[in-house]
Length: 248
Ligand SMILES: *[C@@H]1O[C@H](CO)[C@@H](O)[C@H](O)[C@H]1NC(C)=O
Ligand SMILES: *[C@@H]1O[C@H](CO)[C@@H](O)[C@H](O)[C@H]1NC(C)=O
Image (cartoon, rainbow, N blue to C red; front, side, top):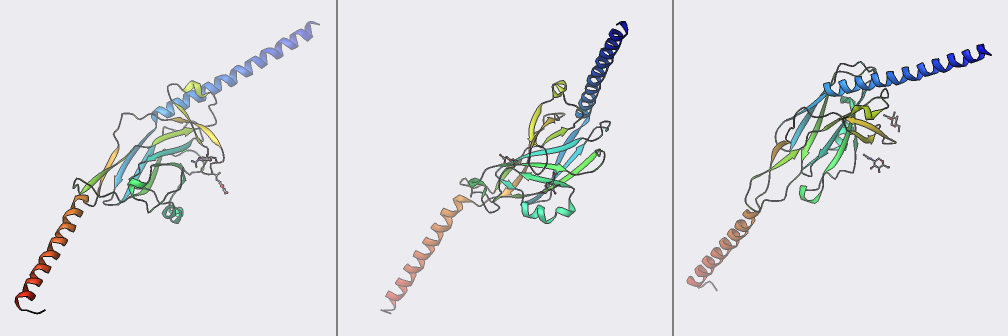
């Protein structure tokens, strides 16, 4: 009788310990993920000139004690630029990341006839998460509506990307406060949605900006007017000449 009771108690005790240990481990992993989130940053830089630029993203990740951490970069692009899916497909063997677009991209549309879009970039690596990842995205300026006030250039503003991280090791994402949890496609195939944790920017950074040349809308009036005036003067001169010399 006592033996049975003892066995049951012992069993309960062990179970209790195991559960507690699991919970502790989960908390440990979440704690590590939190440190990892705080140590991770993303910085961006725009290179090249004119309509065709490169947006260089540098992701620095914390020292990896968690094993496998997945990384996702989300860019919110303005209507003034596009990213060319065909160009990216063409250079797919030169890049170690994959891209998912939230909409189809029309390469021909001028800026004022289209809207912004989102891209999801998944750096690909096997084995442990690297500490530095570089993603260079070719960005192209769209043609802009001619300026009505005679401006030669217009500015395009590109927001900083969001850096999102995910690991299977921490299931209790509520332990990660104040970090925000967001839903985004798990992989580039967009077959399912996962919970990702957003890395906070160290400081509030303004958007990157660059200038694109635009046609001058007000010049159109002068050009047409000038052409008409020149034509009229020529006609008048010619008529006068013909009148004078009695050609008709
Ligand atoms: C992923 O697929 C869902 C359902 O097919 C769709 O609603 C969503 O827009 C897709 N997301 C992206 C980023 O393509
Ligand atoms: C996406 O799907 C393709 C086949 O459609 C597969 O080969 C590839 O491994 C998948 N990629 C991921 C990241 O799941």
